[in-house]
Image (cartoon, rainbow over all chains, first blue to last red):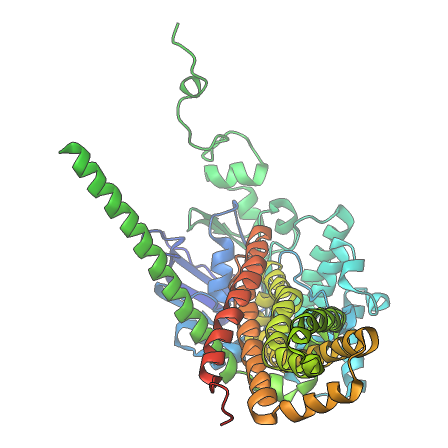
Length: 277
Length: 273
């Protein structure tokens, strides 16, 4: 199956995944022959069931894991060719929003957003203050600058984490399940922010999620994964109209389909020790 | 014959389990050693931006002061009571100051302060780093191109290493004060004899410096174990809980074992070197 299909063939891809295989041990491959091409400026969704390899793929893209076979080219460099310093240089041009925000609980909201700037840029305090306030304003939380992460709701925490991840104006934004556990209002806010920030920063975004319907409203292109493989891809319209049984079951939340409701188990009657009539 | 085969099989299985345990422990020790080497090599940030380390000295050292000072006071008071009991039998009760000071400076100060430090600060360091790992804060740092070992682990390690000798010194000082309260103020040992004999008998090189060396070694051991256990903890509630317990147990055993080794190395048989 030819998997890679850029949104716009004219745009140079910012992430290129070429025949990537990865496994935590030699016996089991989590990712199997993944091919992707993600053009600059797009918002791309990687969707699939929990445990299908989405987050692992995200970690391959950020260089935390190296492919056992194939190559992951990110921002023009193959991650497997980079040493630690090279990897860190590459990550300065990337931002990542973690599933639960991963805010530093010992630092205030202000200091959380200031953290990457303090670590990487020797800025005068006044300029740093202005930058932090601009990032917080972008996510609507300038008024919460003095609060501690423990005083924030889940949605607010996620927005602060978003402000922190865009502090260095990244070219590539990675979102790991950004919608998990959010109420509908926070959900809508995050969806809108992802699109807005992507377009205003001129960045590229990759969203790993299983919240299909909402994500389909914000992405330009979707890769569907199952059991470590890309099984379908296309624009949101193509995905919604897809006849692929797995995609159809997943997008419409059907109980019946290729993904069974029951985890493989021995015969039910035998488990309950029922005698045959 | 079958019985014999079964016994052989059981013995083999036990040996295999023992071998696996030993192998995994040796591997873990090797991993911990590489971790320490990497930590020391990447301590530039902790030393250049010294306020990061100072914050950890406050966290590990200043916040441990209450338990250290109160424990030191009571240990000194008990030493004076017990020491007087024995010394007065030989008519040497005026040497009480020497007994209290030498016991504290050479042994009890570093050892008891080390044990308390492992329980109070070591466990806190492990839990904090472990929870940072479990809540992806360390991964977030990695993603921001910030090395968590340089930014989080190294300041905590050096904070512990700096705090420990200071806490041991304060423990000993407080213990001597406790001994003075009980020996001189309560029992009535002559104050002049208490202090002058102490001053004459306690040697800077053989007693005080050796005590400081011991406490510094314990500081390195406890801080190393605490940061390693935290960094290596499985990112779950149970994993962090087990790591915290392991820090206290391993640190305590390490302190006692190292104390014996160091005492043996420093032993002069009563002759000043």
